[in-house]
Length: 520
Image (cartoon, rainbow, N blue to C red):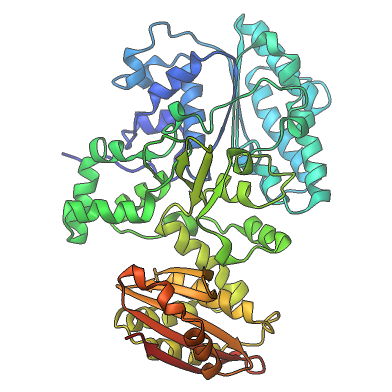
């Protein structure tokens, strides 16, 4: 049997089904959405999560392309295959643009669709051209029009930290989308996808009837690959990867789960795997950080600087839905941006308090995030950092903390001067990033009955209590650990405890001395 090809980077539904690529059937969701109450829908999902493929699937469905759906779920659901005119706009090409280039892109996009509908002399103004397109498509076919807008927020993401530029681009997009409300009688269905959620007031003017399905449990699995889909529709792919890596089927499933699973966009929700990473892993016959390697979250780093958010602060937290499923242009915290971009996801929900638990989804995201912080907190020489991290991982696995600290000391000695290293918190963040890159659990400023521990780390069945000092001595740091009996606070863990006291020198910006003591 010939293996189907994986649609890496292919987001056109017709191309996937006509060329026999692997396709995880989401057409039952398409049918459900097409028969929902209302006609305006919005879906937020992280990048590379299948939003564009979903929009393309909707395009084929509303065009009545029944032949594309043979053998899929919707083939048994839909009885009336009605063809509607579809206007499909893809804003993903408008990233990293200024005002003039955004207007040029909109002109280019509109001109292509106008050519399809034989519009020779369109009116001036992007909003008037969209309104005219809807009117012409409706009159030529006699049927209500479907409008699909994919990646509606793409022009805005990279300037979300810049209020002036954001305002300019937001006004252009508001103007472009304004005909949607005015042309309501001529519309059958409108669907918008994006990463972030901008307020209806700022983007969609009077369009206040959008149904946001992003956090609805009945649409939780509309994008991404569920655990059930992995084990059924992709079962042969799991076996093929297991054979290639020499692992058992169950070990392969565990590895895929550890790296790519863990997303929940509603509660309750099935476990969702990152589809881009999963398909790449099956294609490459290797488990790696594919999602992060496909794009660096520069806008996220910029926003972290603006809001003074430290790497150690990204992780497990409690929040109401209004704290993270919220418009991103009026941020009071970065929680909505972290969540909507896929760096945090829902991990639990309390029905009584209506409080959600959020956390980093999986190992791929944590690894990618921490690696992206290396140039900002440690060194621009990421290649050298990766080699050192490999040696440190081996030392940590062997429980040789002294060697680990020697490796770190030698490494830091090679790093040129960087700003903002004259305070203890900087070194706390450096160690937190390193420990989390090594695959450990690490937390900072951990409260105990007698004070706060700088860093608590758990790795390979051991617990490490780490106290830092700047321009003092390792003896002073160890004295603080003993005096406040930090180790006693963690005795209930059942793990052997090692106390680590480290002193940094602000002049050399490096470790000066350290002490290591195992708790008896």
